[in-house]
Image (tube, rainbow, N blue to C red; front, side, top):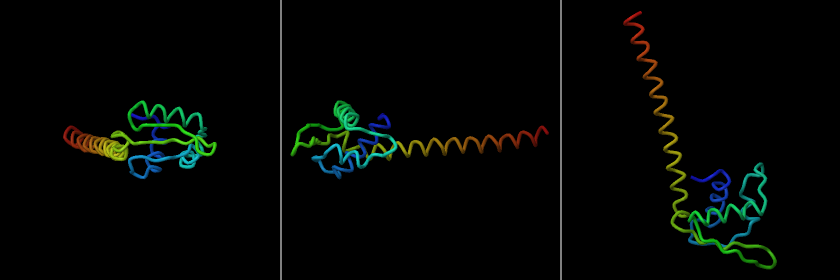
Length: 119
């Protein structure tokens, strides 16, 4: 399971790669897709990218182009399945909420029936 920082940066990388196998992106491009309120910096992005690389989401190569740091990213199986994992997580949360609501309603109805029988 990804942390909030990892999740936001992985989403930005996936969007920048646009579903292709690999891409060449700069930290500034990644930062432009991240929420401003979280106050990311280039060092934090670099650290999270390295963590995601070690977790098997993609291969990461750092390089420079015209003095600007660039990342060559090649998505692995974990990176390609990122969107599917997000959808599955949302389905699981929706199922749990629905199950809790059904449980609460059935408990309420059962309580009314018991109250009418013994009340």
